[in-house]
Image (cartoon, rainbow, N blue to C red; front, top):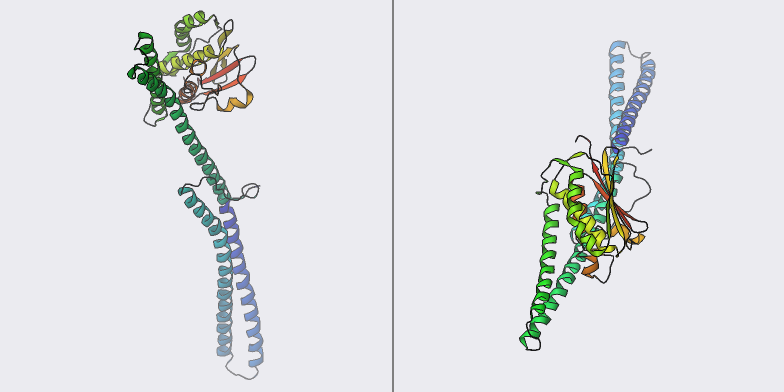
Length: 360
């Protein structure tokens, strides 16, 4: 059982008090006994017994107090050294570690021995967790920078080639080539807009416009909007039973969640496949699922599919993988509503969205 530091210090103080009382008791008993023996020896030679008794009692009290003070000082010194070393040593290690982390080294950790025994050990665990989070964020920042550079490099290189060819007279500025250049520009605009949206959603200043929203209505509106795209690709889009409940939510954000999930299913489902959206009530919430019969998600890829710029298609083909921001935005919107989103792969992909209804 883990004992807190305050409990251990309380035990030490109790033991310290008990030790002082024990020393005082022994000192008083020994001093009193000793001086009463001397008083018995001196009473035979002295006639003034009252003064003699007072003298011995005074000496007994002074000696007992002296021994008590000396014992208390000795115990205080030992306990102070023990407690100071016990508390200061790990704190000094933590200070050194945080200074190393502040200099940019993120892979340092405090040594731990088994389960935390007190608050200091728990603080060490928390600092190690912080170091892991900082290391992950640093890696995420580097990865995101690389991904942004990669995403921008391709359309910029294409545009540069087109314009150079036209400028050198190798190509003629036909409407088709101008349209192709505009498509590359549109891709960059979409990427920048996606980054800006994701930054806005994760900003502390961003607040949802919450009001009573009919869940079924938002799904039906999105269903009607995307149905032509599914029909054009030859994919069957089906809607199961959706609970007709009212949520305190941001209506536009809910529509964006369903749009992103259905669009994602459309990208990865081949012609002749199907996509189904269903809903059911859960404990203190509602769960919406989007299932497709597409290529599925490799098990080792599932933990990363909601990361920014992450795409299962390593070739980064935009026609099949998009910009890698849709699911990251979807996850942020769901969590902003106090919900959860997760995915699994079983004969295609299955996405779950849980939204709380408690107090709604």
